[in-house]
Length: 381
Image 1: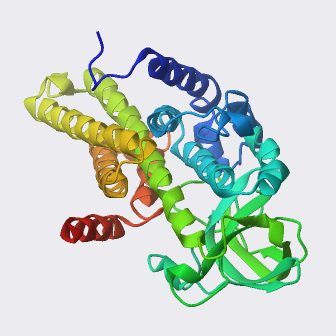
Image 2: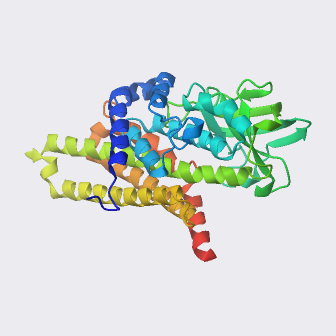
Image 3: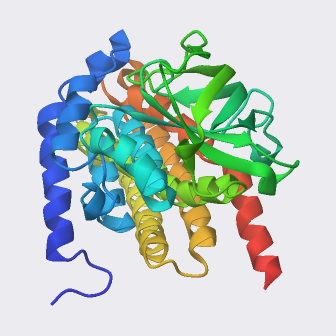
């Protein structure tokens, strides 16, 4: 008998499938990808064979049509091996979902078949050099000329930049503010699309990140996703799911480091005994486990709310993202400390997770913006 707080059989099967894929295809190679800055495109395509390129894309469009809890379970499982690659796959899923959920039959037919298989990879282009948290102030413009939009502007910190084929881009088609923004699908090889140098990052080394520039790019009007002026709302709805996924990546990475810390402290000796026998070690591990489980429960509950389109879904997605990413980094930091000097070496995996998880409290809405969303929603009642 499963309670409402347990995973059902189907969810467990999905989780086990993702865990097996991770153990085989991600965990053994993630350290090398990080060290040599390798983008593992072939491995990503293998994930698509399991349906992980279109997790909550509808079955009609070729996806596997799962809910947001199932998606979180997949991301969490993959991040146990490699948060960077897991997060990259999450962003592709967000772009594919936006096209499937809001695109016309034409735009869906044009892009989704290749996105589902991850033959073509998708980026999400909202942030600009001059607008991050204040996303609705974006300056990239799309001007209608006949049956095309002419796009000019730049997008910053774009995951997949220069490698991905498809860029779901938020651009201004109307007035200032959120209601003047529309979403368009731009292709890598459209004339006028160019890329900045690859960013040199603290972590997330297995995925490319760069500025994307649009210089008089002519985009067919049929590439509009949703109606004109709906782009910002669509982008924010995409982020509800993205925030769950990025939180799940923190949970998976933190769980890996907690497991590593348990293993290490049971083996390492100091003052004549294994350090796991010291109560200080046990108390640290107990706090890490308690906090991680609490964050996981909130994230799973938020995922169900987003799937069910509950009225408080955005508040819960923001709370879960904030708690899971802060907790994940804090757990990894303590795991590194428990490893002592070895934790600081690249011979052990913990320092990679420490670097990779740090960005989770910045992207897809900073954790400060998460507090803004929650606070505003509370006071709106």
